[in-house]
Image 1 (cartoon, rainbow over the protein chains, first blue to last red):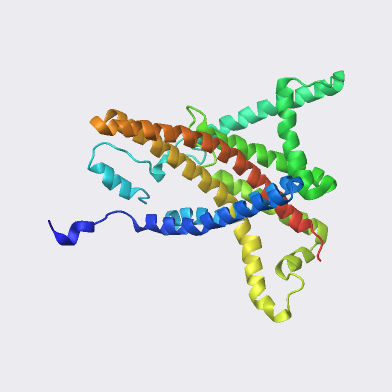
Image 2 (image 1 turned 135 degrees about the vertical axis):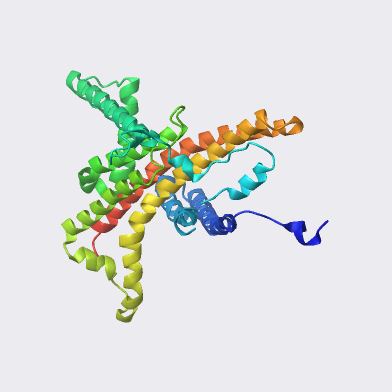
Length: 76
Length: 275
């Protein structure tokens, strides 16, 4: 067996790029949701308001992952 | 533009697996080819959704009017659905964020945006349509442009030209820092807001559609072309396909909600008094 080619991969490096781009927003969305759950546990009567804020936070954070998804269409 | 070229290469060794590509979103033109009004499948779905929405709202408003005229306080099932959907936008989006007065002012626009986005998204999981009408950039761009114009209009109406100076020079920042803050504020308020509004909707729909196509075309491949043991994988991908279909329903409703909510918040920020 050719030792050089043992770990050869083929494909597009953009896929790895997107994987990296998804890490940050993933952690971010996790933090947003976990803090919201925490706050609702502390003050259940505010659940409605907190959930609206949570969706807003998720939408802003998620935008980064979606920009990552959009870049290959524009720059590749 | 080979987003899935890694998969293609992997699959090419095994036979006839066709992974989805970005060309999914450019189906062939079915009518008026060569004119600016060329219609493809996605355009057709948009027109159908528009017609469905018009008919739906015609019957909803008719049932509301009838209920008011006859003084009937017990709504039917169809009327109740309409009341719930319209009240959702009215109460938990418009009134909660903007307050009663401004909420009522912008309610027609917000309702339109909500139902438009929802209707155009939901076709992604409706059999025989199977592609979200908002998964091509035209529609999200128009909706984002409407939201953009609206929040600038709302700010200009309330604060005049001061709206721009409030937005670009936030209060309570030491003077020298404006060199740093103003470009960032300009970028985030006047460029990134509409861009992310359109991109968020578009990319959610594109990713959802590609995932569904990937799941079901993999199922097809495993069931009909793979041999022996590999057929079992088909059951797994089929299951994932169904799971993602349910997930796509959630995403369609959520994106409609988020799009409307963000438009409302931008209007609210434009209307807010300077502190």
